[in-house]
Image 1 (cartoon, helix red, strand yellow):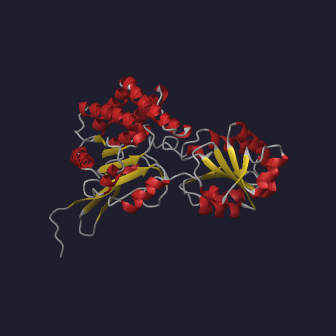
Image 2 (cartoon, helix red, strand yellow):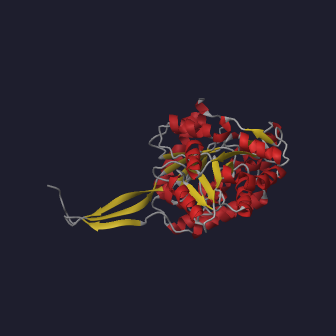
Image 3 (tube, one colour):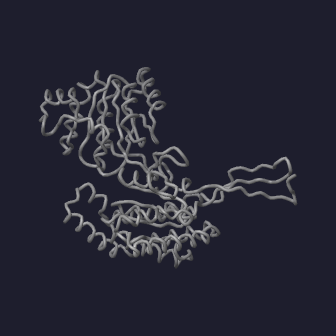
Amino acid sequence: MTAEVEFEVVNAAHAAHEASQKLAGMSSEQRNAALDAMACALRQDQEQILAANKLDTQAAQDKGISESLIDRLKLTPERIEDMAYALQDLVRLPDPVGIVQEERTLYNDLELTRISAPLGVVAVVYEARPNVTADAAGICLKSGNACVLRGGSLAVHSNAAIVESFSRAAREAGMPEGCIVGITSTERSATDALMKLRGLIDVLIPRGGAGLIQHCVEHSLVPVIETGTGNCHVYLHKTAELARAKEIVINAKCRRYGVCNACESLLVDEEAAATLLPEIMRSLVSQGVLIHADSLVCELAGEVGLDVGVEVVLATDEDWGREYLAPEISIKCVCDVEEAIAHINRFGTHHSEAIVADEHTDEGCQAIDAFLRGVDAAAVYANASTAFTDGAQFGLGAEIGISTQKLHARGPFALEALTTYKYLVRGTGQVRD
């Protein structure tokens, strides 16, 4: 790590730490006014932000970065408007700070109240999605936290432009200097420097690939909240109706390939494979999706005229646990719902899993109940696409990511998850014996 990198990171953390102590005393109205100002700044600075993003996307194309990653990186006027709207949506949400969670009088007449409180300084480490810069800054400010944002090198110009726009707007709206700071260094050692700043940074949130998340979990001295990768499954029970199953699978897989709630693996009851899979596979292939299939599915694909070896290839053991983030999917036959649950719990990433079954039959209802109870994931669906795992879709507002761990927060990582609580104790002179 160079001295310049360490200097930048430590200074940013100190600025955010100082700002967090001032933010804790600011009202909901003040923070909401700053969010409105940030949304306006996004729209006003759109031309500069798009110009910065063009530099990033061109550099990514020159490096041969995959189209799915470039799609995550690219900003458009529509996406900037979505980012601005998400900030204004946060304004409309209730303030998560200062909520009374418990009130009681103790045996000695002490009055005890537990209220929600900001975490303090939140550091977010993420990769190629500049919209995360907007979401993270907005969520942190709404919940009374200062933030240190360390985006990936692919989006360095985009992130710098957004942070500059936000920090200026927040200051002009009365927020303390340092409430939103960005790390501009593209060296990976900047993340390692952040992970050492226990005492200045209260929590670290990595958002990105499995390698980034695992590195932070294993090496950070700062408490980490994982936002997990998404090897998400859709399981087609033998009672599933074809039209519904097809619509859910195509939406879950093809709506956007590069998002963590996309379906990466399709399971189907062997008994219903011949009925359900041919049309679904044809539809996937028609949209350019490469299918990695087990031997039974490969055989069925050949029988219905798909090109085995080109459009459908034999899956390896690695495919069952792979997050493709690309137009690829694995398909496997299972005996029943119990085998589907066991497969998902072994190879899934505890993100989002779905079953498609006929809820109007006893057999379908039993399968749905078993699936919802047995699958270990942050979001488990019956007869709906995994694409709905999203803070806005859940009515939580913008999110930093999807937490796949079990302590503190799970699922869409939104406002409430960025608070802790503290006890307020009022007395009349009591002393303890």
